[in-house]
Length: 164
Ligand code: RP5
Image: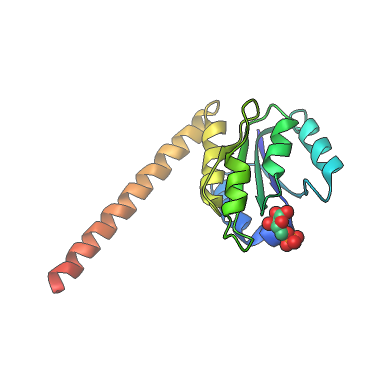
């Protein structure tokens, strides 16, 4: 199954890119779209309504300010939507975070941190891994690699502390 990565504006792309790298690392097929809930409302609705039949298993929806892209998409599909709030405003992304995470009941959006593109991608991979054993194995490897990385940092810091 593919992942759809939707962003409200091309100005969101520098953040989105970090998540795309993760999807690539896990060999996940993905498609990227610029769709705005307020500038292209009909396109947003049509995209979300057709996403299921187009083979998408998860949608990552990223937008800044109070654009509500993730909520609009989630309202029009049964595919799980991961909302990615973008820090693009004078409110440092808090406006976006609240508009994504505070969805009223009935239309869930799984929300990650402000600019948390890597976690949005990992969450999407985890969802797909529920029905894909090789992807699940790749996630276990990813966790093990992180563990080794932290262990190496622990060692390095201990060596630094010795020098004080
Ligand atoms: C949101 O408004 C977009 O997701 C973007 O984060 C923000 C600003 O968009 P631009 O004015 O840069 O196109 O809809």
